[in-house]
Image 1 (cartoon, helix red, strand yellow):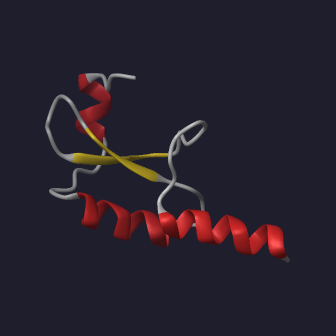
Image 2: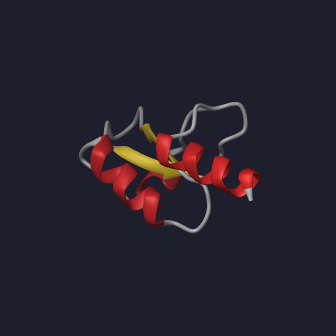
Length: 67
């Protein structure tokens, strides 16, 4: 899915994926990072269906299902 210019301007921009994933790890809900085709920076999205999740999110979900 392509990011629209208005959405890109409203979202937080991260210079690298490490910074984006650090913020995503602190969120109480699943987020993943992606590189924006417009600004070439990284953004976060909550759309995770069918996408590869970061390792910390995979571990969080495994812990929940093991409980």
